[in-house]
Length: 358
Image 1 (cartoon, rainbow, N blue to C red):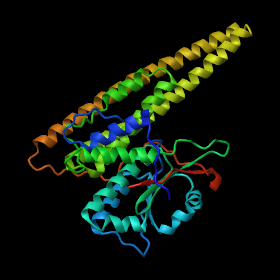
Image 2: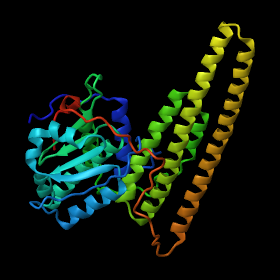
Image 3: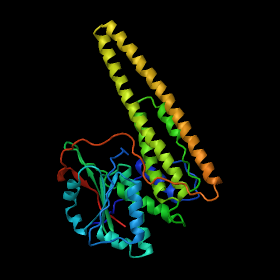
Image 4: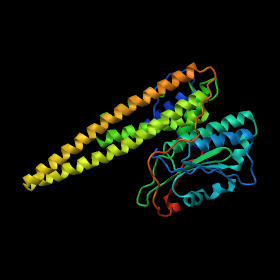
């Protein structure tokens, strides 16, 4: 496998990833959270008999599997890399993180290697949770991601996403003398995102807010996994609020689609000089818009309520002399997004990235 030698361009995705990772790894910085299609719960952690992670590695994997139920974790033989396209096609849809036996062995070999491998592991999880890849294979010293293309879709030329994620996390880690730690100054309030969604007047703006919601969820899930009890409680409450907001965003998209369809029908009726039908469509459109405005007001109210809950939780945790809140390790997934029977994936649909050395 050849190491990546090309230079990484500063894209918007790169900047978003950099901001997200720095906000998690720099404990004294007060950053506003820069925030994926939600996937069906299918966390699955398997250990082949030939490898057994040490207690520290196993604990980290268990935490990640619980905090990211949409990602399937699997320990596989190193030889699977030789037929990675076939392996990826057999796995099909969903998000998959394949950990080679040599990667697990390296992770347990020393404290230094554990931290190095942990950095790569967290960056891979973040990339998958933000829907930048369908899967990642971590070998002893290299990482390769893959994407699934539609049969009539051209292969995506952007194959360096994982490299950008890993490089940004390594840089953030190098710039901090402290280990991966969550700042107590991180904001868990989601009201501003609720207001952004309420103000969004077209599909493009709604989709932009949705992307920010999913980035925030990915960041907060890392905090819920790696933070202390206080941070974990606040992060999980914020995640639940954002998951509810993601449902609202999909509802708003459907409302906008219906309004657009009514506008088109009305325009056709006007062209055909069907005045009665045009008036009926105009009245129906006004009703749809009024309903959407009411829902927008409800979204703002829900955001304010979520912020009040976060502030009350912060106050309780700060006043408690020995805070031991019972925090659920499971993060509920909104909606019912169970995929229908999908067509089998072929190797021609799998695009592998360039390997990234770490």
